[in-house]
Length: 302
Image 1 (cartoon, rainbow, N blue to C red):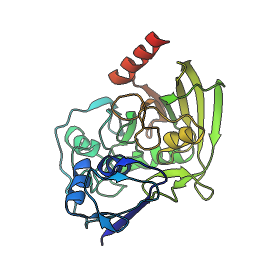
Image 2: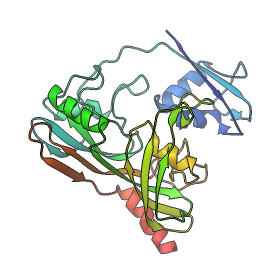
Image 3: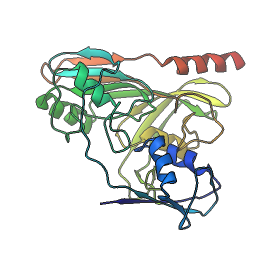
């Protein structure tokens, strides 16, 4: 069955190919370009070219072709395995890597790499997500826990549900946050305007984000965040909601931002009880090079 995606522009948004490439994160940019060539992208019911400039109140419709069946293959993609034993693994995912295959990303994902590098993976999730207990966005870097068998998967998933696992992030955000600490408690659900985006909505699921300021740079603030819940795009949505969007965020942030490889958001710390032994395990991953370089440049200017 074909999928129909509809978006309404709340303001002028520039070239449609760039807009859709940034918004439709489940699909590749090359796929978006192909839809435009095949006249599957309509603005106000008229097919448009890739260079069409989206205007306020434009109604965009995309008729997504029926998905092809995904075939999972092991791929020899470099992977930083921080830790592994017979039950669990901890991976430091780089920016730009999608966690699991989808219609827009059939290969080159973390799962494809896991199938090559790890002997066993849990089978609780559907066939395209073996071992995946939780996700981080494509352009977010950092630590992920991987289950190597179903018993481990159930234990790790329960810890996430019970909010006993530890997940800390570091983000560089726009603006100068005046207070040193804060808690954002605002429900998150699918946007009423753009179904590919998340937003703070009254009927959304409960979402709680704690943050603490680490460093201020005038126009930007470096913060550490701890998740109490794990909603899609939670940090990005919450920070934009309070007026301090994550720098480099192509979806929830401003057009004028810091150049990088997506949003400046890194899953720095990950902690959980080992599913078999009950041992408390904590792992930390350093900031990616582009993140460190950007901070160094901001400190020079400050």
